[in-house]
Amino acid sequence: MPVIPPALQRFFPLPRPVRAVLVFVLIYIFLVGVSSLEGGIKVMGADTQERLFSNVDHPIAGLFIGLLGTVLVQSSSASTSVIVGLVASGALGVDQAVPMVMGANIGTTVTNTLVSLGHVRQSIEFRRALAAATVHDFFNVMAVAVLLPFELLTGALSSAAEWLSEKLVGSAGTEWKSPVKVWVKKPVDWIKDGLSSFVDNDNVLGTLMVTVGLLLVLVSLILITKNMKTLIAERVERSMNAILGRGGGIVAMIVGMLITIAVQSSSITTSILIPMSAAGVITLKNAYPVTLGANVGTTITALLAALAASRPEALTVGLVHTIFNLTGILLLYGVPFLRPLPMKAAEKLAAVAVERRMLAVAYLGVAFIIVPLLGVAIFR
Amino acid sequence: MVMSFFRKRESGLEHVAHQTVSMLADARHSFDLASMAVLSGADPAVVGADIDATDERINQAEQKLRSELVVHVSVRGGEDIGVVLAYTLLLKKIERIGDQAQNVFELASEGVSFAGADDIDEFIEVRDTISLMYGEAAEILANQDEDAARDFLARSFEMNDRCGDRVRFYMHSEEPGSWAVPRAILYRYWKRIVANLAGIVTSAIEPLQTMDYLDGGATDINDD
Image 1 (tube, rainbow over the protein chains, first blue to last red):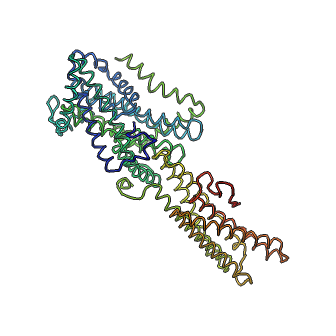
Image 2: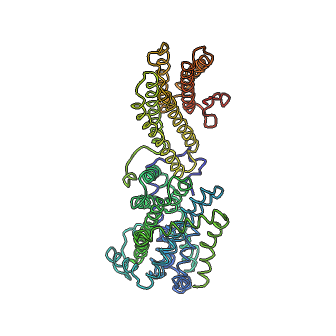
Image 3: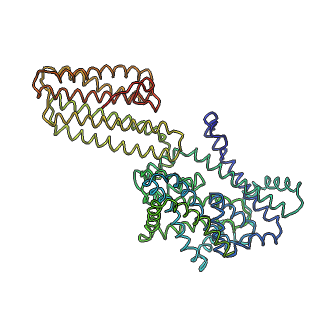
């Protein structure tokens, strides 16, 4: 969603300082959106909240709802921010939110896989592009396969996050006096007052506030990403060239993380890798750590969203997202014999998909839509 | 490498532009060395190592810059696609004139030397003119100066005709083959180098689709 239509952009290029200020304004609007979402849920009655969120009581259902929601908005930054908003409202517990956040991590991989389909007509390019895209899928699925049961059995990830958020903002169940919350209070009140002049039913008012909040979160994130991509394109280019010159590893991971933090979208970072991989200028081995860095970088948005929340649990969920991704990397990338597994799986899938192109489309449909829908239907 | 994200440096295409000019400087270095080996009888073993290293540098630069162009398109999308395609053509042309300097050097490797020959002054004059043309082409590339480009192209056609005339002259010469053939071959290589330099300079005045041609695509700069 461009600020200026593409055809006119060349005539009205935004000066860099203006664009930078715009990004700050958009971050503020994003925080207003998260707070409006939280406020909307709070306005709804307890019965409505119970009805809405009882479906995610089962962790597998929560996982798949997180996945489907992210596929729908094509952004884990957006979906995890919404989850944080829901936790902040008290409608969703940390234990319900954790599988959803893990699902969001898987759901975000759909975008670069879709991008890789653009190379479907050139066998060699497609093979490389699909492998580079699905290495992200396989890594995230493997991380969830290991860490979700671990979390359900031990609660270790959420305990670590809870400990950290307690140190930072206070213990669960208390009200956190976030300064950001104070900054965004006025616009949220305006939204609430404006809407309440049209409706007097709390459930309708809450639904409208949630809708406005969702729109603000989604639109502001799209615009933040777009503007930041323009602002830092040269830096991204330089960093990518540096990776090409010197190989992958931890440094590539940090570069992937920095780019993602800057553009607030792991999809942008991982999608940039696809044409590079397709052309053969970056190997799968070097693209893989960039992808992992993007996984960590994208968790910054949920942490940012937690700043506008009034409950420490919101920050706990944001931190679980970060800790989950860091632990996944330590385990699946840090342990040498596990490291090649996602790459091998991705290469295998790409080799099969090159022979049967429809398989790639079927993979997308089954992995990102049918299986999650079935999962929600069975486990809700 | 991580710091490359934070440092303020030239943009991707600016870097490609600077490196392209550097490649042309390397190509000139190769040309000067190879021509010197043929004209002055310098030891090919001594000159050869430098020419090989320079050629390797040109090849590496071409590959690296191609990767950078792919990265540029991946990051920026299609907004600079015309410039990127033009650079792909330019890089290949520069790499090719690097190879043509190698061809000139092969004459020296085969024992050809015009040192002390009666016609050495003419060879030196042509060599010096072409060598200067490398520098001019690099300057035109860097500054995108249209007037200088047109002036360069006019002179390059004259030089091309002159080299072509010499090739025909030696082909029909009554002198022995060991005298005429190396001269014909040298002028043939020089003619190709001049044509490629002209092709490079057209990037300053012609749109992408007629780059390496002139008059809106009507005139082919024949560099084969």
